[in-house]
Each structure stands twice: as structure tokens, then as C-alpha cells.
Length: 111
Ligand SMILES: [Zn+2]
Image (cartoon, rainbow, N blue to C red; front, side, top):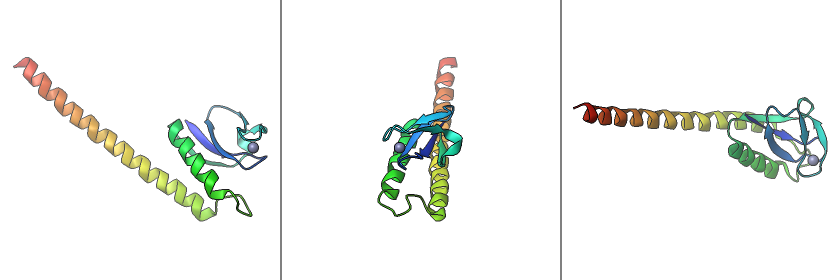
């Protein structure tokens, strides 16, 4: 699992492994404990976490208060769940298709 966090020093948003307690910002080198910074999202896939971190970083850059609005934070959580749910559904559908093929192959083998 990965988490998307914001640096306490420079507000850079980046992704880190969830089991890592102490974080070092890739932008400014500031180090801090994971429990003391803003965490936006937990995510299974590092590439997805990195992509979300990059998008959020772009979004808040240049804002007077470099933070998501509560609405944006809520939208992020909801959108992520929807995308992830679709991903799981696709995986399940694919799994079932593969199971069907395996059954067919099994049928041919035992005929
Ligand atoms: Zn930083």
C-alpha cells in the first residue's frame, strides 16, 4: 500500500510506502513522521499513487493556501473509489472469462 502525502516543509505532494514511518521530501529534503503530515489517499499501486500525487501537486501549486478544498478532497476520495471499483469489476470479469476458457479447455482435455 502507498499513501499520497504533502511535505510539511515545501508543500510538495508525493507518494510513499505506507509502512514507512519517516518520510523525506524528494523536493526539499525535509524529513518528518507520516502521522504529522497531511495524507490524501491510500492506494495499492505505486504508479497510480504517483500519478495522483503529481496531479494534486499541479492542482495546488500557486494557490494562496496550498491545500485542497474540502470539496476537492471529497471528490478525490469518491473518484478514486469509483475508478478502483471499475478496475476490480474488470479484473473479476476477466477472471471469469479465463475460468470459462479453462473449463472449455478442461472439457476438451477430458473428452
Ligand atoms: Zn518538501
